[in-house]
Amino acid sequence: MKKTFLTILAVAAATTAYSKIWMPAIFDSGMVLQRETNVRLWGTTDTKKTIKVNTSWNDKTYLCKPDGDGRWNVSVSTPAAGGPYTVTVSDGEKLQFDDVLVGEVWICAGQSNMEMPMKGYPSQPIANGTMDILHSADPSLHLYQAKRVSLVEPTDTTRGTWQTACPETVREFSATAYYFGRELRKVLGVPVGLIVTAWGGSSCEAWMDRATVAPFVTERSPYQIPSTQKDIKSKNRQPTVLFNGMLHPIIGYGIRGAIWYQGEDNVPRYQDYARQMHSMVTLWREKWGIGEFPFFYCQIAPYDYSIINWTVNSALLREQQLIAERTIPNVGMAVLMDAGIKLGIHPPYKNIAGERLALLALVNTYGIKGVTASSARYKSMKVEYGKAILEFENDKMNLYGKDNTFTSKLFEIAGADRVFYPAKVELHKRKYLAVSAPEVPEPVAVRYAFTDWADGDLFCDGLPLSSFRTDDWPVAERKAADTASDYDRR
Image (tube, rainbow, N blue to C red; front, side, top):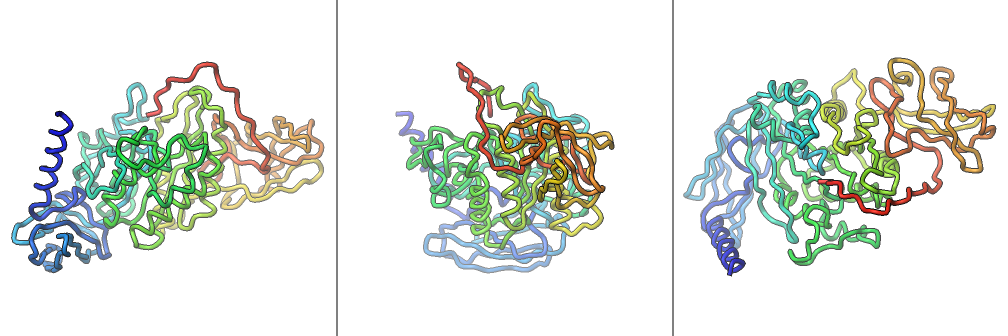
């Protein structure tokens, strides 16, 4: 009886929603529209009347006819930046959106480290969160937080509202996204809109559609593609469910680009992650239809995964993220090797994550000169006089260790026997690293910070280097504990 009643309510709600002019929740007062482009507005109506859309910044009226199902969409031209403006939509009945800004709009997606709010999680604070919340009021920074929705079929709307940045709203908003947006506001001086669609613990597979994710659903996959709502065994990890419930409703909304912080859930099946990211980014870009929009992401921070009884070395997932940066066009990776905590999968330094994502956007998308946005990367190795000589790319300045000294405790070196020993590291000719150990007279392979937990200690121009290795040898898994962990991965 209860299920029947809920079904009746759902049908009634749907009938009400479509019995007059209707638009998805992403279109609302307080929204930010992408500047200097043509942005789409869309919705439904139960009439056959012409839809009229008026934009106050140019006092122009756009007309369109609904199709046979009552669906309509119209493209409107946006100015350089500014507001607040008014957008009015009418089919005889009028919708009016006030406090509309025109500026830069970014999607902010991923799992718990993107979702983690400025107030933190229980017993897991955000570094300097209280003071940053206190000073967060900004009428030109608008925030949209999509509610969690897990569906087997694509939906047309999210649940959420646009809000203006102030202590009360920022407290509940994604910390990584907030720090990203705050930097854009400071440097660009235009309105910024942030659309957060994230769910803690979510898999990469959950953010793709059925056709795209199918090749990645293998025997390693803990969940299969659901056919009905009853088939959803995990609301945040099952393939397609978050693409359907949380991304599909905003596809087509005018954006500049996307930021992404996800990967922790995919550590146990790291092998396909670079290809998955490539497929996911390609899918999103195809669906938006605005070309290869910028996509910047965080490399997962170091953390001791043995705490939650995982046997796979998470450096292998970080390696996949490094491969993704090399293979996907118009992307950038924020390295967080110095911003993790050994005993916490939710590091508090979300300011570092957001600011490094902003660096990538400001340099690569907005053309800011004079700053470095990308970490130096391992390029090649050769052997000279019993030492492994490593060369790097993107090294605009000399490499250095913590406290402006050149030391690193995170290198290992091995010979043909594949046994690794702690290594000594020297800055060689002010451009290369010379890595050696007395136990390895003939080096074959070098690894840097290639463990779950490592406090990154190698930098270049203010940015840490990713963990890396020069070999492709199998990496042994840890032995699992006798009892499974009950750690909450959100």
